[in-house]
Length: 154
Image (cartoon, rainbow, N blue to C red; front, side):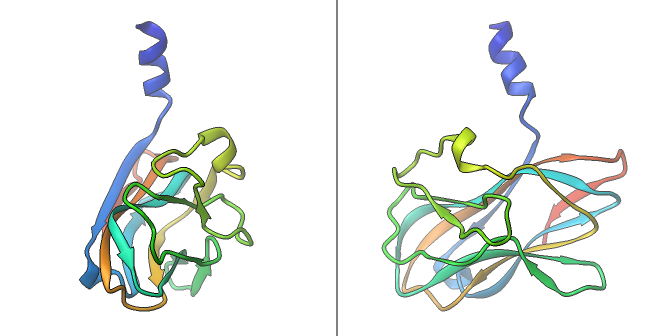
């Protein structure tokens, strides 16, 4: 039991944002980071209901007063099944990683360039088009690097 507790403590804070078909289009604000930097250990998207319609997804970050920077390149989400996971790998040139087995992401191999640090700013999901069906959950696991750091949905 002690090992399980120790393993659970190694995970950071988590935050998520639900998406419906109506919100899976264009640039959508996910999380606001303020008060200090964070170390991002995991970031991605999980399909909750079957996605349909030509659409791609990527994540971007905009530092306060700056312009958007891609956290990954876009990947097609059309026909993604329930439980499909898409993961940011941490290198900007990497495509958003679509796991080969629905509902399973092997952490050691899926998040190869993690963690990365983000300062004051805004994380966005960017969809290329409007889906005709689907719902999902964007998620991020992070550790605050300052006692004043705050992360909120927005």
